[in-house]
Image (cartoon, rainbow, N blue to C red; front, side, top):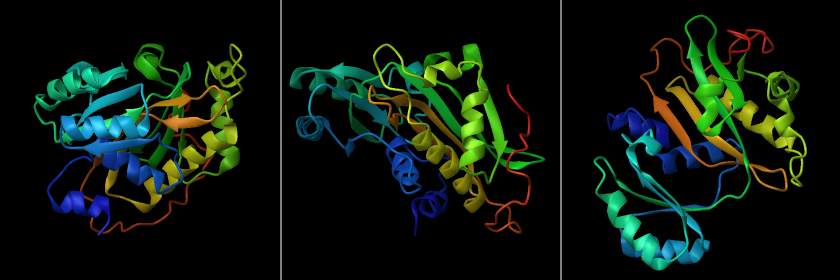
Length: 244
């Protein structure tokens, strides 16, 4: 039984972040090093294994907007900081455990996602990410399935496309690696009717140009009984809503 089937069988409406990243990694989407732990003592062991500084997060099905909940602690540099923040995070309602994660370097943040349009079905999104996602609203969409060429076109269509070039001494973003993320999301949308939405925000660009999914949300739904898991016939280059 895969993680999606198991979650639905348990009556859940979403995967926790650690489960979501594991699921996405199975489709070639790069994720950072992290460990899921139950308590402060295990968090200390995990932090030592990953290497300081680390990020500590509260994880749970219902913890979907971590910043608003204060469920993320960044740049923890010592055992004392990890122990203190672990205790605080575990007290958040709905916390099922802790994610100890590497602190990924890089200043550029993108967003990739999957949504379902009533007319077009599964659609993949790419745009400027991080805390400015909703403020700047710079994203484009394509109907799944889509190939590498369509994914590369999406990158060129956002208004802030220059962010993908060389930046302040950092390498240009690896567009082929980003394309694999976009194509992988489309594959998930076509294979899993039970996945209603995916939000990978941010996808950080390391100084060497490689992308990594730093946070991820996978929202579930009951799959339509007659639809099965099939690939859609629509033109992969036809966006449901164009650029937003």
